[in-house]
Length: 268
Image (cartoon, rainbow, N blue to C red; front, top):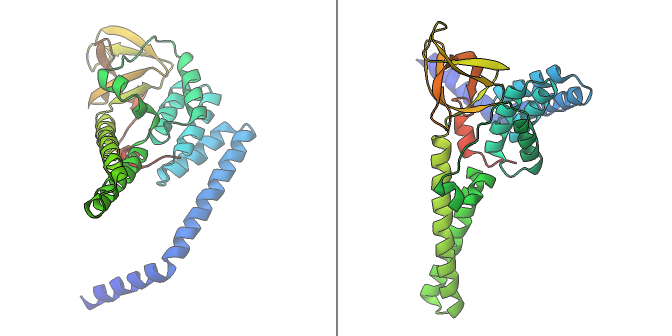
């Protein structure tokens, strides 16, 4: 018992005194790896660049630029599925980035399957959601909340006419921002999109290689992931077509590894 207490105290003091140095060391190593990966990309060593970016992401550095660069490297190696997958993941973190959106659009134009997602009424009404991350919406909501309560408190003590209009306008914007934040949160929590990774895959009627081939899909096509069963994934298309594909041939955009980060990070 005493030994355990002493060990805990020792760890506590190590964290207090050496924690900042450890964090700085990790940051330095990450920056060095990011720089070397960029160098490898510029020199045409795309697989080396992929390994570097992937290492950064797996070590917990979920930055939109890492996914974006990873997508670029895969695109250079003609791995269209993995390129689009990482572009989509980058877009969760920095949806308003012009270069990213251009590259993603260009990559989508190269896909062979004509699959388009129809917009619902919410997406058309709150059209700005696609260009703002959850963190950016949260920041807007917080600023408007502060503005509203500041104007409201000032009006309690000083009956300035301008405080009335500021309160009303900030309240309306506060409600819009709060609704937008809630809708974005809901969209991300229900985002079941997945990307076909292989050049061509058979979509089967059941989770067995002997089942009937219903149709074929190609690399980069975005489908909706429903569930997995014995190494197979059930996927569907916007036109309600659905079938089974080998699990390794498709990968969800949001996974357990990047899900919480995608919901909370503000992006670049």
